[in-house]
Image (cartoon, rainbow, N blue to C red; front, side):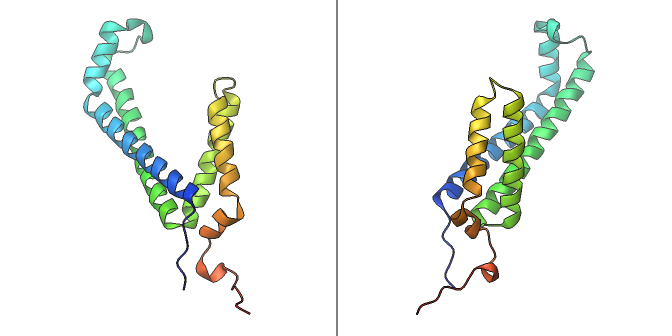
Length: 146
C-alpha cells in the first residue's frame, strides 16, 4: 500500500490548530491559577466592569478558564487527527469552520476576517485531493497500471 501524502494546507492547518490548542491550554491554566487575583484586580481597578462580588467573579473566571482549557484539548486532538488524516478531524474542522463563518457573518463588519478565513477553510476542506487524504484506504479507487 502506498502511503497517503498529506496536503500542504492540511499540514499548515494542523500546525496552526495545534499551536492554538497549546495557547488555549496555557491561557486557561494561567487564568485558573490566578482567578482570585484577577477578580480582585477587576473589582479594585475597574469597578465599572462589574458589580459582582470578588468571589462570584473568581468563579466566573474559573469557569471561563476551564472552558478555555477544554477548547485547547479539543484543538490538540483535532490537530493530531488532521495530521493523521482521520475522518472525524475533517468533520470536526468543517463544523468549527462553519460555526466560525456564521459567527463572523453575524459580527460584520468586525467579523469579516473570521468569515473570510473560515470560508477559505471550508472551500479547502472540500477539494477532492483534500477529501481523498481523509478517506480510508479501502474507499480509494484502485489505479490501473495498464
